[in-house]
Image: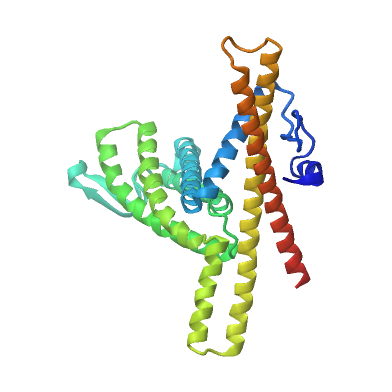
Length: 344
């Protein structure tokens, strides 16, 4: 139990909020919005967040993988939709430039009714090519910071990462354009509507890029823990080769900084997860308290068992207390780590 400092810990962790009936420790959840609809979704979100962090605490590797795949997919689909909208409407701004096939190698495909095959350019005209390049480039300008900062939570050299990201995008673009050039010949030959053509082009270029980028990102955007492990292996290799002491010292300094960043990131995430889990448990406990009070006041549903409701409330209270204790421990671990580093 948390003895006499429990109220201070709770206030520091959650701020002031709606309080439930107490035994030894007062359990508080974060204050909800005055708007009933917004408060309803806040409860659902907090419940889900608590469940997620509980799962992540038990299955760290699986949780990291699910997190990465989820946000990668959401952001990739989002920029793909953006890309489709731009490629659908932007060509009209360059309509005067669309005077037939433009680009290289501009050779005719007999199987597609002698429609021109274009790799660098567009069989529909220069305006379509310009629109496509603007759409894909701006989409990647949106995608890069989202994937780097949120999906992969990378803190590497942003200039270096942006450089390799650009190289990867350029190479993937050449590959997808080569593939689309062939498909486009038949699309024009069959006379498909522009909206359908734009959607197909988005799917071909966007989905292929998505799959390839997923694996490229894992290399381009190593998180802090991976960065520390990479430097640790590099340091071990230099020691094994008995490299120059200055070089070893430089790599050791980078490793120590990376190790600190990785541990700080881990402890911060553990603190945030523990706080979210504690708040979710507090919400469950408060709901259980309200249910017991409603039954006692005759406002409960027919067939409600007061003994069962009280048992559930007591169990919810125990779970909430355990979650608050874990949150306090996570906060203390983070503070101790920062203090120890500052002292050193």
